[in-house]
Length: 220
Length: 332
Picture 1 (tube, rainbow over the protein chains, first blue to last red):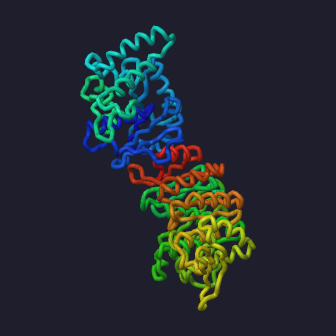
Picture 2 (picture 1 turned 45 degrees about the vertical axis):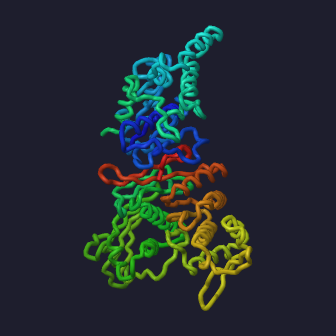
Picture 3 (picture 1 turned 90 degrees about the vertical axis):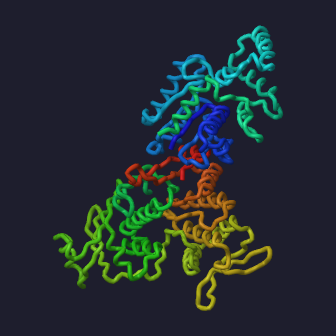
């Protein structure tokens, strides 16, 4: 069994998108959540065709230890790889330490784990940092407008979180892209009923580190 | 209550350890991994313990013959089936060492024991518990339609079995209680009673909408199965019950209500329950019923094979069981 633990639904869908783009064995919609999963702390996306690959939405880093102890530890024997994608946030080393501490506390064999901190496993930031860094802002009108708006926001509102602005910027990009209907959340911006939205270009160099990491989970 | 058990060399198990079992234990795993074999081993252990210490239940030989019957072993093959017996069951309270031996293989102690027999037997099940040696001759054994008071196999129950089980309910005088639980499956069931029809004992049920009177075998497999489960549970207070493939014949929409009834009965009657399943809906229904009933004495046991093809168990306590099922992760 190979398991990818990620922080939120946008990460889940990015990972589904990456698999569907890099390996023709995988389809975005092959990863399915349970019908009655909404009330649960964490949600497992099983792959319909490949039973031994699952993505778990932790719904926040706080559920990492719970998931390792309650879900994965009993099945440690069949866990071949456990990959964790988490945000580096404002302190890369501290974020990494938190993940390592949870791994140690879970008492699962450390050699089964690999960790990736967004945006690129090197810098501070998060998933939105990664998504935004892949965009050519100069050529996207709504993002040019957004830069003025961002200046205004940071000037007028004190202590505004960079992450909040980044999320807002990602939303602005999606909302005012070519097909804006019902699409203003990053989590649903990869594939829609018409197929690939084309909003995210995985061939951009910024995606290379996360693609390599996600790919390594399915390699023997 | 069986909490920890070690089963050595029983059928496909080399050395299977189960720890932290609970009041309700749901056993899962892929086809042919040994779910039923595990149920049998637990059944053998519990029945032998009860037989020798509480003077109830099946003897060891009766238990083996009953298991052989559930596995559809025919009369002419029964002795060969028994000759394959060679296993050990350990718990912190009791150790059973059970082995087939021909008369030529008996050791000195066993030969001494043989002198107490009046007949000349040639084949034996030899077993040791903590205190004593026991020799069971198997020369003239016969299966002859055995039923168990606490083991439900995966097949549809016969009329005779249902009547026998229901008579336990009558003896306890809890027919109305039985009916209340039965109506959870089908509220149209108005009454149930045994009937002698053409020299055969049957269970007859009266139904509403439209008003009908039918014998149980005319009803669906699910109803027969549920009658079997209910009557077995209600007549095994303070004991253990074993159910193979609990969901057989039962419509998935009824699983939640049935699990609620089962949890209520095992709680009130102080029963330890072991069930096998390969059905995700049954596991989800148990999880939901346990939350609704605030019942947390549940363990899930998954059997799987390691890289060397050795079968081992993954036992999850209630908190791990419910977290795993809620998350949608497969625990079958």
